[in-house]
Image (cartoon, rainbow, N blue to C red; front, side):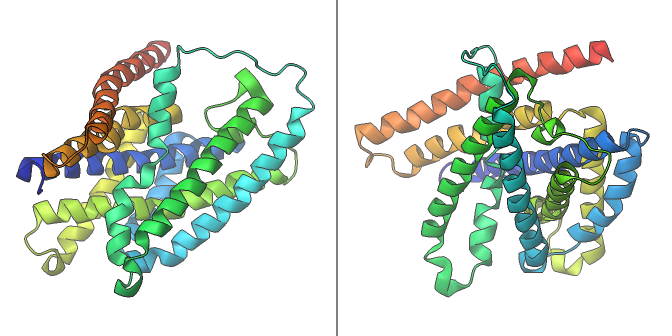
Length: 318
């Protein structure tokens, strides 16, 4: 708001709403694709009818503290699932006779869009900081930097290990590469844990969306509980409808990354920084800001057009 006024705030809020909603849609796609991989008789609409009612119930919670336990369960499930997937990757190295030694830059824009999407928690930063106790809020920056370092390291390691293990046969969702057994095995456990983690993470990612929408649509959300409940249910149903239209995990990730995430990560931070600290920035800082903005402005249309072509190609096949 202090940088470019009301319109700037509106732009940021719109980008957060679209990006966070996109993340929730991607969660649903991940869960339904993994479940359908084992129960092919169940269609997408059937899984959505099963998943959406409990998700609607969880999104009715109005405080992050109420979601602390579900968030903890999600993170524990993630860590255990990551460990098992890493184990499968390393075990599979010796069974691959030829490892890829060349790379193509054709898919680089698509990769960058997905990489930007990976930092999906950007819209949660302010909500998380405000939910902390005042005595520890001053240490939030230290915790945040440390967490980002760990997350980035895990992303790079996870992606590299998966591609080195499965090469060009690597699926968009790595769990689909895990071997399937006739009985309960580690692959089933991993997929179950990841699906459970995303299921419980969904209401957390939807939290800032509801805060922003209630701020614009309701003068006093505390006095209009039922309106807020209806809005939450509608947003959950919208994510289900989006999944029906774009049921491809990587395409949806890249689409959100190429548009809203690019704006939030590159264009707006540089613009706001130059506006607020105008006249006091060094040449080095100005160059960094302009570089970030250039990457975002050029990358967003390129990535969006590439993704549109992928969606059109899929629709022609269907």
